[in-house]
Amino acid sequence: MNLIVNGSEVEIVSPPLTPLLHVLRDELDITGPKAGCQQGGCGTCTVLIDGEPRRSCLTAVAAVDGASITTIEGVGQAEELSAVQAAFYKHYAAQCGFCTPGMVLAATALIERKGGPVERDEVLEALGGHYCRCTGYVKIIDAVMAASRGEVDSVDDLPVPEPGQPEVLPKGSPA
Ligand code: FES
Ligand code: FES
Image (cartoon, rainbow, N blue to C red; front, side):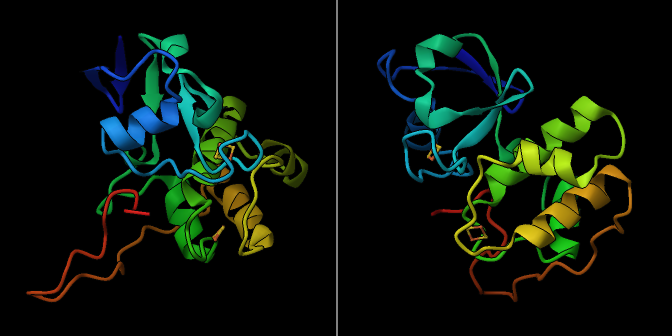
């Protein structure tokens, strides 16, 4: 089996019924998609499959053989955040960050689908199956609406590690 993950073609050796979530995290070491409920209920494992948000915990890898997969690692870089990522940062829409990759990917798909400003009820519908244990929904919704309107300043104040300190801006996160 083969996947195109964040633009790069990779060969998959996991068994065909392995959830895509575990292929990404355990075989490919891409840890942006988070393992939450692993039953389809929380949204934290969401990735884009051919541009559509899908729960990777419920998706057998064989079912998406040949597909294009986008994780949060493929959306932006620390030096060049996407509009949704920058809006989350500016609006303090991430607290612990566990739900954030799934939220950002679902919001990105919504904005691309709409092709312009999105309303609050559209954000609520798109993120309806995404749970934030830190209960930061208002700021998340505000961030998505701002990103859809292009009302996001560039981010130029991310923390930079001091020499000798560990990297503080990992792709995804080790969690
Ligand atoms: S981990 Fe997939 S929906 Fe919760
Ligand atoms: S920011 Fe902590 S779960 Fe959402």
